[in-house]
Image 1 (cartoon, helix red, strand yellow):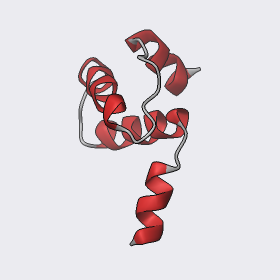
Image 2 (cartoon, one colour):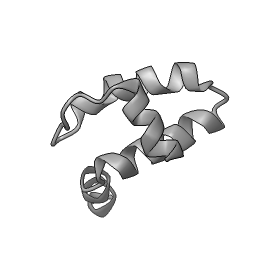
Image 3 (tube, one colour):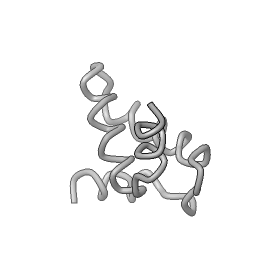
Length: 63
């Protein structure tokens, strides 16, 4: 369990955004619901990144 927690917090911002997008998409949420939710979750990360726009989040996922 400790290893899981450590790996969760060692994710890069890009890995976190892609993982959360996939999780939320699999729950049936739309991108219009997903990206604001991810943007709200990012500041709670251990090493919070600078604020990312919804467009930047979309670029992480879709390139």
